[in-house]
Image (cartoon, rainbow, N blue to C red; front, side, top):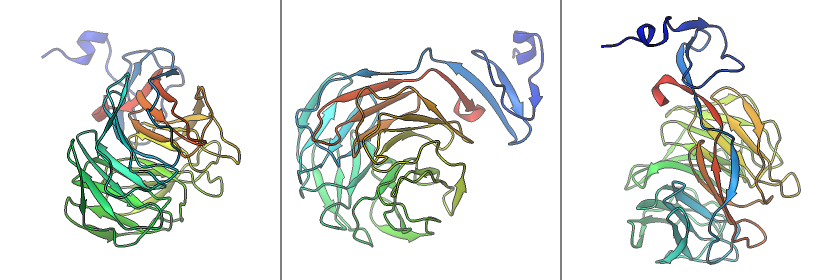
Amino acid sequence: MTTYKEINGENIKAVASDPSNPVDGQIWFNTTVGDVKGFRDYGTGSWSTGGDLNTGNGSVAGAGTQTAALKFGGDPNTANTEAYNGSTWTEVNNLNTARQRLAGAGLQTSALGFGGDDTTAKTELWNGTNWTEVNDLNEAKRDLSGTGASNTAVLAFGPSQNTETWNGTNWTEVNNLNTSKPFATGCGTNTAALAFGGQPSSVATELWNGTNWTELNNMTTGRQRLSGAGTTTAALAFGGGNPNDVALTESWNGTNWTEIADLNTGRSTLGGTGTQPSALAFGGEPELAATEEWNLGGLTVAFTDA
């Protein structure tokens, strides 16, 4: 098998911190965090215009990827559900219970919607065609957040410190957030998640490792009613209110937040999904239908994510 040294002419270098100006394909060992890392150059990061929602809403929930997304619920209380194929939104079967200020997680073909107005515990399961009511959250709530890779493994947190996990059948209360997070957002999975932002214009960031929440470095700009996408080592935060609607976008590399290119339209209570290299933003106040697609520039990732 060909080695890294045979390809590049030298061994992987050990450094105490990530290089400030890495080049595409560069790999190094960060001795401070104990990770092999690499750099990918995706070109210039920016938001571009996608296809509009059929029905503009704020206070929506979402799931899926940039090219296969699901939007559901919204303000005013609606059961509307739409699916995105990378260019066009199509109306599909509605939620059983109309609501706003709910949370969602999962994929376009296997999503979970939970909580919302008026402070409900209702949970619904999406199988790619229909929504089905399933077991309730233990604590009725609205203005909450959720993460998860499918409708069988989801994490719900906020607006209080309460955190619950979903195993495909039931919700179970687990260890609390360190700080209450109304109107916050998050990303990741039910065993490795980030929670960030929240009211009042919070900069706080917390990491979930499957058992406990740990406080991490703050966002650059505090805000609430924002949205996010990605993983615990490569995340994106966009939009929100501070107190007015903002277009601000920040990138997370597993250690710090960095301000990058803005949304084309500042907005809060928007939906978001996808990854750090390719995220999707949609809806928002006041009843916006606009959709934006993010394509990232350079990205430093841990070797296991490369």
